Amino acid sequence: MSRNCFPLFATALLLPAMFAFADDAKAPAKLPTEKMTPQTGMLVIRDLTAEPVFARRLFPMGEKGLQIKNGVVTPGDKQVTQLIAEHGLAARPGDRVVISNVVIKDSAIVFEINGGPKKRGKWYQHLQVGVGSATTTVGGAPKSLEAKGSQVTLAFDKYVPELTGDQVRDLLSPVFDFKALNQAEAYEKTLPPKVQEAIKDHKVLVGMDRDMVIYAKGRPPKKVRDKDDKGQDYEEWIYGDPPEEVEFVRFQGAVVARLEIMTVGGEKIVRTEKEVDLKAADTEVAQKKPAEKPANAPTLRRPGEQPEYPQGSGSSPAPPYPAPGTTGPDNTPSMPPHSVIGAA
Image (cartoon, rainbow, N blue to C red):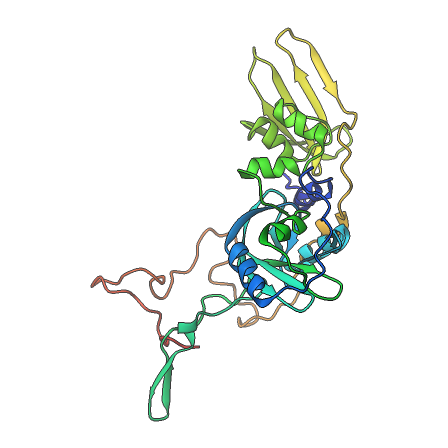
């Protein structure tokens, strides 16, 4: 029985973002004509900073993020897919995120989520002390310079109008859900009404993706991977045990391709006709494989010399010193050799 992994896992992340949004994602009302004052700007910043919300769309990592102007969200699905392939995924529909920073510019308001697209050091990481010409950074360097967040730009034609915090929330409703009580509710709101009803009734529809099936039936007690009569890989999730009703949910790629139900009375029901029409994600990006290593990769070993710890041997070299955060024989924190405390 084949145990091949599926290369289309990224497709499952991308599909939910392509549905229509919930009814509460209403079109923005007519905007005020007055320009926002500095005092109002400060109130909006205080009102929205550090507020937890739920994402309605896919958010790519990086500075490009998403933009809302006149109720229209850009970039489009294919561009977002490409950005996620290049920079990574910051959030997907239904994920809880935090508005970590709000910046008001001349004709736009920028909302950073989950720390934003840029890694910022703390103020104490720049303090230096010294004697004579020798100085040392006492705060230490940041542990990582890689940012994991994203941002949303709320753009206007000429200037940012005089808006309240609630009005700004209405303008952000295409990408943020401020009203959901939990992650499951937020995720369901991003789905079509037919799928929402199926999830409430704990039913599986042909064409659902893995997330939808999990929300409808829970995580599968059993999984089977194999090939069908045509030699195509599939994964089957099995719910229930005889003599109770048993459901066999077969995934090919990212979505359910076949549903087989064995009823208590012994009747066999098979459904293969698509019941949920999901738009095809960019499979070329989803199936993109990492670049292969060159045949003659650079090495420090002499010609013919075997590696001391070959891959797959199950052995690995012992670390030359205890891992950071552990203690030495005298219960004192261990430090790597040649380390410089507070090196920038």
